[in-house]
Amino acid sequence: MVKVDKFIPKAIERISQQVHGRAIIALSGGVDSSVCAILAHRAIGDRLTPIYIDTGLMRKGETERIEQIFSDTNLQVIDAKDRFLGALAGIVDPEEKRKAVGETFIRVFEEEARLLGAEYLIQGTIYPDRIESEGGIKSHHNVGGLPSVMDFRSIVEPIEDLYKDEVREVARALDLPREISERMPFPGPGLSVRIVGQVTEELVDIVREANAIVEEELVERFHPWQTFAAIIGKGTGVKGDVRVHGWIVAVRAVGSRDGMTAEAMELPWDVLNRIESRISAALPTVARVVYDLTPKPPATIEFE
Image (cartoon, rainbow, N blue to C red; front, top):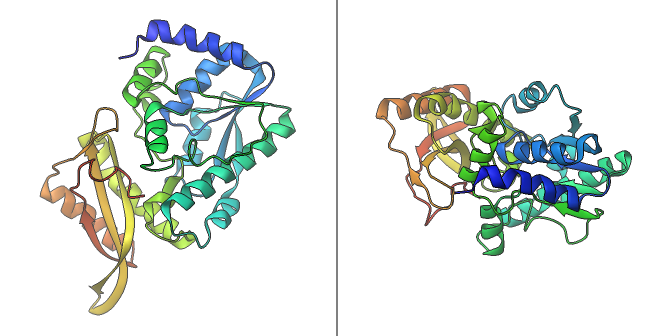
């Protein structure tokens, strides 16, 4: 485990040495980027501008909640929904999706940095992101998904050698709110990787609502490492005595220590039954709901 009393001052000193002007930080509201934001602010003060990009691929109520949590900062909120959906249009391959999202993020950050006169981008890359990207498992949008040419003097990654549980330790030592320090991981490409196949606004809306139902049912009661809903294809069903060829929603809930391995959680049947009932009732185009039992490995936690 990381020794936080030594890590924090070293990280602040390292940022001070790496950043020689204005910087922006990619702030998602997750524990990784939030820890980086605190460390960077302590290192360079008002030379730092946090930027949150609303990709249109966020969880239900996410943008509004991030604005509330970081209301006492100079947070810049950028609406780029149409841009991200446009970049993903027609793409089916998961790796291509991640690269499309990664490049769009960088291009938006570049534009905002130019307006602010910032030459540095700070982001919350952690060690598992690097392992999975460099090992060919999947390209994280902030590592393997980055374009080869970027208009930044440098990209600064203060926690790139930490695992998720270590980042949480640092967050607690920095007195971040529990809502942030214990926050469930959420993929950088957002809901786009919870839709197997082509991403459309309609499917994003469906998976967003299904995801909200799953989180409402499981997060507070069972404290999973990660839980969510994903659209994995189509299947035949019956609704109102009418045949429908509707979407299949898969529910995933796993326990883990650092995200490198994971086990599916054993959930009570009545809870799974209630999740199915709520999703089917709320979303007319969903034909069936399934629960994924696969550990990591052989599966990854996300479907794409």
